[in-house]
Image (cartoon, rainbow over all chains, first blue to last red; front, side, top):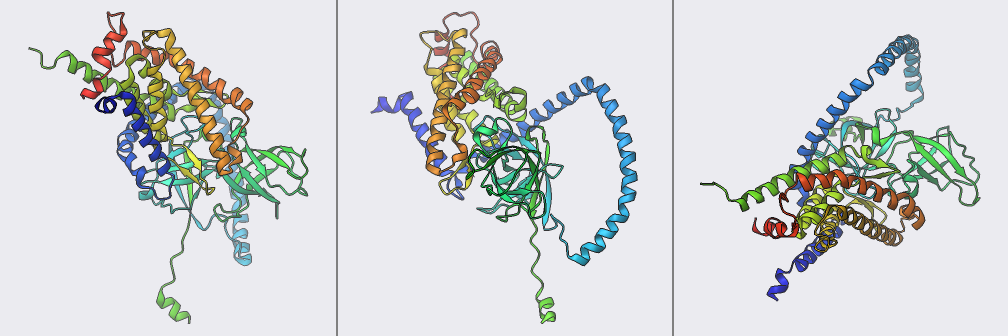
Length: 293
Length: 211
């Protein structure tokens, strides 16, 4: 017995069983098992930030050397673009005033007016095809408080859909990216009363940077190049967030038409993202209610 | 008079060198994955590092380094799994389980017979990658069927061509610099001795139990 307890294989087996049990327990809602990783996070996160910063500095330095001429040309083009945009801006100011008047008159709601937008930076990306969540540097102390069963949309700087927050800790959040096979969002063609369907991540299409579009009504005609936005169905994502464009449509099975979608957001190139949190309006004060009644 | 003896020095060296390499390797992998990508797969630096640690430095090195690297992996990029209720949840300790097992596999094959020689370290990396990818695919296939997550499934041929082979290639390439690091700037000194297993007996195997 003593010999067995000292055996390296026996010790390894026990450790594997304990780790397997912890892995299963961590899947339970509100499991405290994840808190055991906090000390590792406290040590590894700052170290990783230092390595990342050093890598970014090196990369920037290298880019400054190699892209010098290209940057100068781009700068000239951007200056011309700024001048053009300034002119357009003055033209649009009047249109904006008109819009405000009409908006009040028609009670049009701003698309994201019920959401608070929080900025965050990407700390780490996927390790391999299976260890593939993304870590952000904003957590519950920054106001990203996630309740069980809830989730927050994550957008890139151009307001395209990137994924959704599925877990938060004090200082960090984890994002399920759009291409992950567990991701699903209700989408529609970006026209008035556009047909709705589901946009989901797919293990096979992930390697090509594509999503699968399914549950398409057989009467609906999709074409490559059509822009797809969130439909707002399900309540998790507000309506109108750009997702991507249809790349191909498969009509081979008339009862189950599917399509592939190329997302706008390129997760590999992103550094900063925005988290949309539904804005909860404060309950009206009792005095106001009393006055009203 | 020496303040610390050779044994203590080798332990300190081991801890410091492993700590630096674990932080560096894991941080580089999750910070710049696109730099090591090919056909949608990423070279798994942490995985290769753990296999080689086990292969060159013995069972306990493989196990301990695998466990720590796995914990770091669980913090940096844990897998998200579709649960039986259809909800997607982030898991914990899956990385620790995987890399602990991988460290043991790396230490247990092609060792005594091959005297931990350099060419066979590639075979060890390839063998461990085959085990990892096959076990991972079967596990995901079984779980996805159970949870009804069709989107997680892909055909064996697709898996072979687009996941298995690119990952093998990338891991074999990643093994070159990591093997050089572990062998020539590593936590265990192999200087001036051809019988590596003897060195491991003195410096490697069992050292962790004494810490």
